Image (cartoon, rainbow, N blue to C red; front, side, top):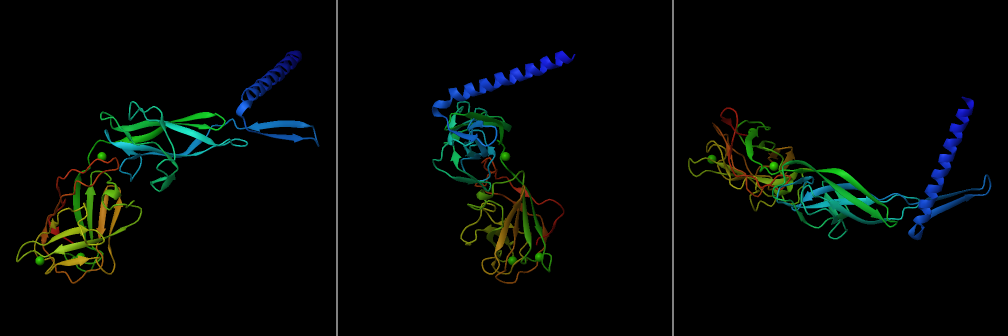
Length: 337
Ligand SMILES: [Ca+2]
Ligand SMILES: [Ca+2]
Ligand SMILES: [Ca+2]
């Protein structure tokens, strides 16, 4: 048994020796363009070590973003998109990033190797900066909804190549729809529009914030103006959400919403045009508008049920335009604000 153990030990030693020779052979074969750091220690055992770059670069961040920009990670069938990534190369020393490509054949059958370059970049998406991106690609029209995978292949200056596969993007072909509208009294008098009162719009799914206000990421509230228009004689008053300059309606309310009756304002009023701005915030599929400083004192209106029709300029995270069907206020008939 003892002799067998010695033989086994010797065998392992021989295999280690063989493996070392093989590794040096690889190093020799790659020596033509190799960068390597050599270290020697003459004070102790006279060792010698080579530590070249045998490691390919990796994409440290990566995503897919629709052609419209905005929220990344979603594509619609037939929609444009780009692959975004940033890279880091490792090695001792690292030879440096050289080239990369993306395989998005799960979205676009022909897109098996789209170059990722710095042209047109850098790009910020979802609060992350990406140095490299593909050209504009188009998802095939028949791409089924759900999670799809893509891959990124990167090569360093020493010709080390690696592929990161199983990266995910969501395909969504369903248009967002309006689901509900509610108002909330946060002031002193229920039924009277006041600073702090809210209008809450609910969609069937998250809407890309930049389709509500250009350039808005949704990470922080964005200013707006809420305008109440006094109904002529006994006609119902109306309310709409406008841009911060009070020069145009937001696509959230392309047409004013009709209030239950004419009691809410006795003359046209704006909230947030001066003083504290009205604000728009987004949380999931809900968009909330909070009234800012009023230009005058509102009145107190009666009970009823609201109807809200969103604009077709709104789109979801994949870029599907909102349908313009109306949502009816859920719950019992009540006074607004
Ligand atoms: Ca959708
Ligand atoms: Ca109120
Ligand atoms: Ca009125």
